[in-house]
Amino acid sequence: MNEKQHLAFVTGTSSGIGLSMAQSLVQNQWRVCGLSRRPAALEAERYTHLQIDLADLENLPAQILENWQDILIQQPWHTVALVNNAALIGALRWMHQTDASHLGRIFAINAAAPAYLMGWLAKSTESSQNIRVVNISSGAAHTPFPGLGDYSATKAALRLSGQTLAKEFELEGRTADQAAVFSYEPGVVDTEMQDQARATSAEDFPAHHTFVDFHEKGILVSPDMVIKDVLAFLESQPEAHFCESRFQKE
Ligand SMILES: NC(=O)c1ccc[n+]([C@@H]2O[C@H](COP(=O)([O-])OP(=O)(O)OC[C@H]3O[C@@H](n4cnc5c(N)ncnc54)[C@H](OP(=O)(O)O)[C@@H]3O)[C@@H](O)[C@H]2O)c1
Image (cartoon, rainbow, N blue to C red; front, side, top):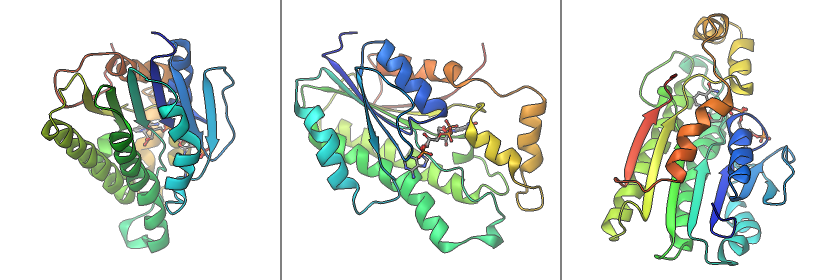
């Protein structure tokens, strides 16, 4: 990969899957712009970090314009990628304990900000540039887990907004190898998100034991393992505008 030709915007690069993704993309000669609330966890010439809270939707357009737009237009990138990875696991509470302001925050981070970023990328790229969008999804986007109602709803919304973008690419006459969207379920990964699920009591979080079992049975995999499918997609010539898959252990 030629550094001058490939640019990736990756959200949630301060830990877990996003950090591993940013590190691998940099190693593969991509120029990478990452973001999170915490400072950068990665230092590299090809990496630029933006410290923001994705829940602040009001300021998101201005932040993106100020920090990412220039990088996007500064040279004729061959491929421009967006990896919507940042997310909150949710309140880890029964639906009857739902808090309205928390719902606003989790939908902002997990669904609204990613949808905004997809739209921004679609409008800011030239038709000659290849676009690759990855939305990090979850089994919870399809399957109900007691205690994950808020998180599940945001992941279902993210998946569908990605599918919609893919349909719009098609309608605009872009071919799949020019513009494609990948919804990827990483399975169960050993990150801070899993730590939080195990740390929440069974009394508050009805799926607590499921998450403790993932850990005790040794099912959790490392972020480095699950990012391989994403990297393969980003560097591929997709045959469909939308595709999705789930991590499978070899
Ligand atoms: N771990 C799993 O088993 C699993 C399973 C299925 C799907 N996933 C998905 O995988 C993705 C990555 O999660 P992970 O497991 O790697 O968890 P993680 O280590 O907790 O990473 C989450 C990332 O999102 C960022 N983030 C959270 N809230 C943010 C906000 N308001 N503004 C900006 N950035 C924010 C965090 O950075 P800051 O805290 O610094 O803001 C962090 O970099 C998520 O989409 C998650 O839903 C994970």
